[in-house]
Length: 177
Ligand code: SIN
Image (tube, rainbow, N blue to C red; front, top):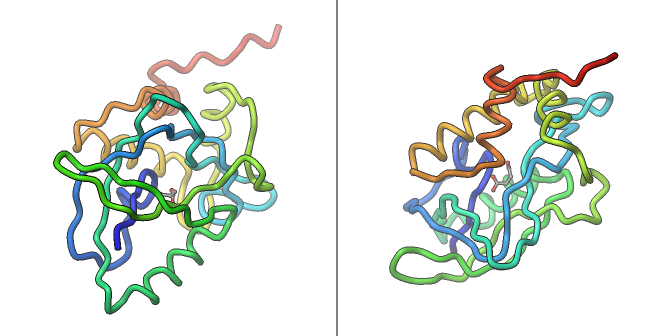
């Protein structure tokens, strides 16, 4: 059984796996449009984490993990708990350089109550830079994700833009006048 990770599962794996390989899924994009009241924020001030949005013709690159069949049930139970805020397991074709395997991915769809619509990169970055939750700061989530993607030679312009904004490299608050 394979699981495709595209967010925290890339850099904060936290479960046992047999092997990990770079992989991608077709027709999806990684986006910071899922509110996080439980990991990177609080119910009063939720942070922002990634989910997948449909994007025909696009690919989302990440890491696929092969799960040990004798521990499958407990690993999935733990992951279901970790990803409980709006994410559902979705069966998906996971593409590798040399083959395709059927696996699953945690996907929070647009109907889930924590899905956030139409925020600008500035609004997302602003929110992220102020959010902290039980799993740590929201800034850490973005910067660790960006670092892990870079290590895999994955360029994701959305993640890069947010990482640059919160690192202050392109931070230009809108004028209040
Ligand atoms: C994932 O990493 O694949 C799911 C989203 C997250 O936990 O950040």
